[in-house]
Amino acid sequence: ETKYDVYRALKTFFKFMRSRYRLPNPMDVVQSPRRPKTLMPTLEFGELTRLLHSVESPRDRAIITLLIDCGARAGEVCSLLKHNIKQETIIVHGKVGWREVPISEVTRQLLLQIAAFSPDDHVFYGQKGPITRHLIYAVVRRALERAGIKGPKLGPHRIRHAFGKNFLVQGGALRSLQEIRGHADIETTQKYASLSLT
Image (tube, rainbow, N blue to C red; front, top):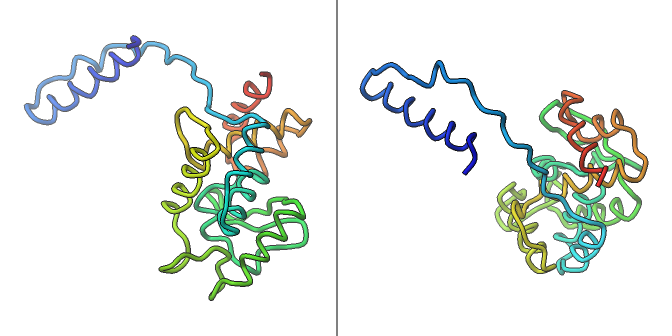
């Protein structure tokens, strides 16, 4: 355990004591120790290739390919509509509103194939209606495990981190990455600069 972990545990404990017994919180005067730096879990190029080859169903292949290709959030994939698949982009609705995200022709063709079988405006459809974030997490986790990829956070956000890192490694600009990722603040995007250094 680090000093930061101990600090957080004590802070939570005394917060509970204050609410339960109306005691003063001694942690109010204790300065927080520096939080240890952690690296975001990501994927290497070879792992992304294995991941693509581990997917069997056309729908799941389209989901994984889309995540790898543009780093979309799980919720943005769920809410993707047919008419928002454009010639070279898709239009998604995320945390900062609507935005246009570039995609490859391979991804576009996969999306159009899946959308052709959807009974309503959503591109991705499950047995009970439009797919949910929970289903996307399950699809990604299953694919990562099948590809033999281990470690923390076996979900779509790990692929999102991989997209950000690979974008910068291949010469993409930080400001462009901010636009594609839908980050409101450039500081969030700058975290990927340290990933790309490795």
